Image 1 (cartoon, rainbow, N blue to C red):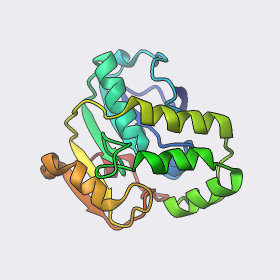
Image 2 (cartoon, rainbow, N blue to C red):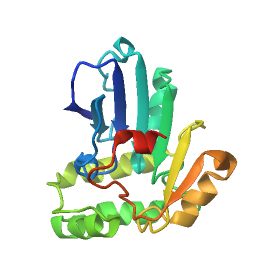
Image 3 (cartoon, rainbow, N blue to C red):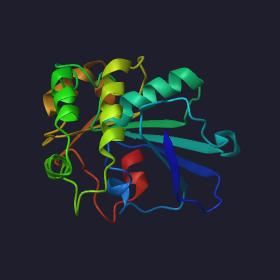
Image 4 (cartoon, helix red, strand yellow):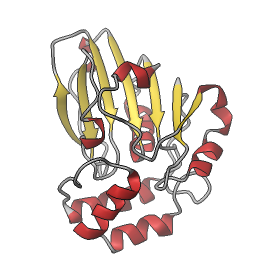
Amino acid sequence: MNQRWLSRNGTNDLILIFGGWALGAAPFAGLIGGADVLFVDDYAQLDDPLPDLEQYDQVDLIAFSFGVASAGHWLAQTGFRPNRMVAVSGTLRPADPEHGIAPDMIRATADNLTESSFAKFCRRAGLDGPAPEIDIAAAQAELLAVIDRGDAPHAAFDRIWIPERDRVIPTLAQEAAWADQLDAVRRIAAPHVPFRGGQSWQEWLS
């Protein structure tokens, strides 16, 4: 996993973000708030250590897209328990035709990945601005790792955001995946990347 600080103010509160595939921190660029924010992505491997999270009084997890399943695997491996867990635009069954994306489609994305096809993916996801830089080989390896790793163990989320116009992980697949946690589900009129500039982190943690 890659990790970097998006904000480090020396507060007692941390927001731990498990980002999506290949988009980097771009989806979260406009979010505001006073907490420290640690961003994690690149899920080819999940065994890289994170900084000492126990130093914080409050650690909230926001997992986005393929970061949802990756966070689920990581939590099971480490035994770490955030104070609050939020899933956005993703499921614990990422490579699943009914509860995520069909494995053949993920594999085809990897096999045919170019800078041009990635730019199209970014537009389909609803990412504002230009596509981030992409390491083609690393992004392909990450997709194949997501397929091979499979379903994440069950995890109870405090809030689950499902975009109504998701063209990456279909809205219906997300609804099916979270059928056992309906009390936590909130639907939002947005594409796969639902975050917008000026929103606060707390809006997504609520």
